[in-house]
Length: 340
Image (cartoon, rainbow, N blue to C red):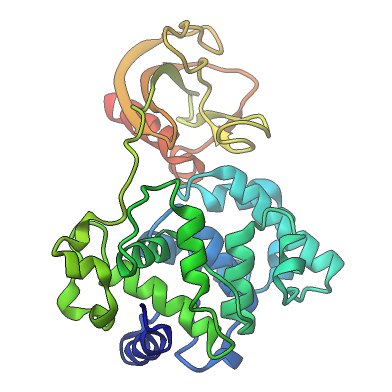
């Protein structure tokens, strides 16, 4: 039988001594200093990336848009350019829609309950729980991959992911309490990211070893069990880097819906098995090599082609284009400029 109260006390004591210092986080026990806007923004950024990668983006965003009202007033293209490199660009569109809803419908103040937060555009169950707990200290079951891993090891759950998720969520819910719910959520995240790591858990540093069933088996790294993933499909495409006499790069705006929707991009072919070579304009097109990129659901090889010419495009200096483009197009641009 897992001793929930003792585990809670041990982890909170550990968090008081070892909490990470992060630009969006108040110190342990200092909820009154927590800014809901910063919590929400950080949680959205961290959904698909790491703390070291997200931190400079967070700092640039909060310098440029220090409040949710400031962010709500941003132009779509301005926001998309600032988001480049964080992936999942639909989240950037949802970020802006949510900021505008908070500004217009809530007077610039985030609602405090999970139910109200879930009603905001682009806010899912995890983000609503995280903001409610961390920003407003409301009891909420905040379950991300780190929490799933900790629970799977504490209870030695033999059901593999993703089928185990409902059970792991139920187990995490056993620890929810009105005492320091925000610190509890962040303590679990810190434990999972820094100690209870996926491949090489640092059990000698863990404050919960006295109650860990996976450790008793002798192979805690075995958990969580995972169903073997299907092989990621591979696609191919052509990317066209067109420059004018001044050295500016031709950019286009991608359709709002679909992959990289609403972002600035290079003209490309469709991405498939055998894409046609169909440049956006006539010119002295020549091959400049290929770049590889991995998306969540498929990998991509882009054959890069370069030419000089004219046309109805958004002509942008190369250094500005590199900053505005998503990673896959920045790779293609860099390849083209290196071959010039």
